[in-house]
Image (cartoon, rainbow, N blue to C red):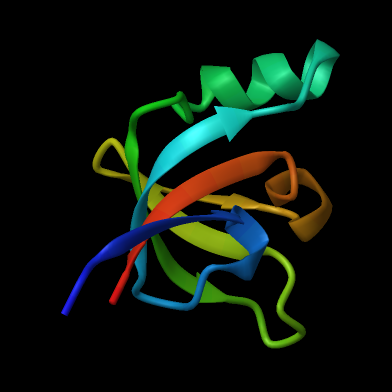
Length: 83
């Protein structure tokens, strides 16, 4: 069985899945705010849960639980392992 890496948007990750942040495409104030939260390329990220209507998404990064709206999470690409 081979393991492949797949890149998805943070919004597309399933609950309890873990990956590595591959890219942050947000610029300006949103990009700065995301990076200030500790969401940086190369960090491990795990989806913890979602609100009842699937927005926002809660995740753990750098031993901290954070939330982002789905439209903000779309700017974050995550590399996950796929079996």
